[in-house]
Length: 116
Picture (cartoon, rainbow, N blue to C red):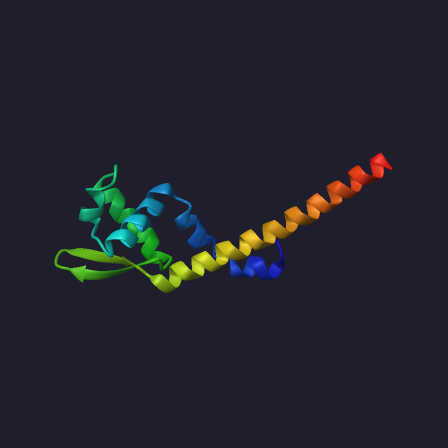
């Protein structure tokens, strides 16, 4: 991975996104617009406490923003941070595509040299 790409990738962000439960929560928040730990736990196979912990992780990396709603917090996806994550993923994908093209060219040249 190039130095510029390494500097652009936020490991904490991707660690948070790497968890399937947190990705499901992000999906639900994107579809529904917002939610609390209680409302999300009703749609997930984990406890409200587990949902609250996962939301805390997403909040720390900026993927969601919490606003007070009575005794609970209402969470929404932070569009700017999600766009940043998408841009990082696109950049990493492009870098790997370039690497794979180079590997393919090297393999083809080796194969061509063997048949000549």
